[in-house]
Image (cartoon, rainbow, N blue to C red; front, side, top):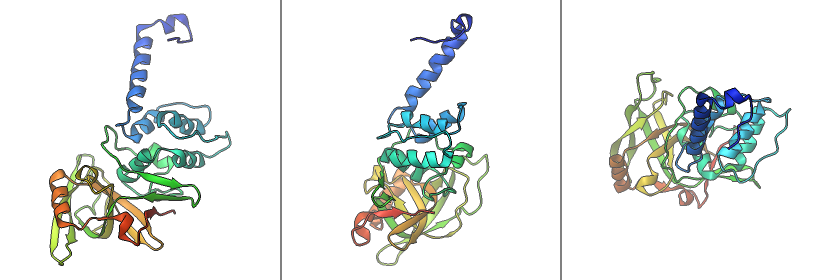
Length: 264
């Protein structure tokens, strides 16, 4: 390994140790079980000549299928959108299922670049997620194929959490096919409020290991879905939900179409 610079500084134990720590950190980020937001947090601390350089740097950490062309005059938001479009579908699922609030840029389902840089409590750490969010270049739409609860009433999360609340445990109310009401415990690991109301709920798949993460949102016309927030369910509650049979495969749920994640 070669490190260029002032010989006295380069040979310093502190410099060598610090460099090794950074390499180790980058190696961890590039593991398949790490959250996309680990890479985002790492890039926050980087200094770049041009603002878009930090967006471009993420392409090397996230195993993108291609590296988009970047221009010095390009806005960070446009560069971020280009990166998300070529990002692997698993990392795109991290944006949908882990980021706690709607996007305020050109997409609702995932954070804008400014949100990714400014959010104080990003979901970092290991992620056991096998979900996919596909980008259809021909129709320029983002698509998710998983399971869906057409109507669930979210209760107890309308007030924003505070710094002391690592987790907020509340519930959703759903009806089975016979009209019987059931309550399920849910966990919000963020501070974003979810107004008490009935929502459409989507998750990753029809296996217990793929139903931990859920997105709260609105069903819109033309087979689209608008994100509101996210929550998690424990294995015990997932088992109860499976037994109830109200979570349907979204691919077959509405005339055989994959759900389209809504644009702004």
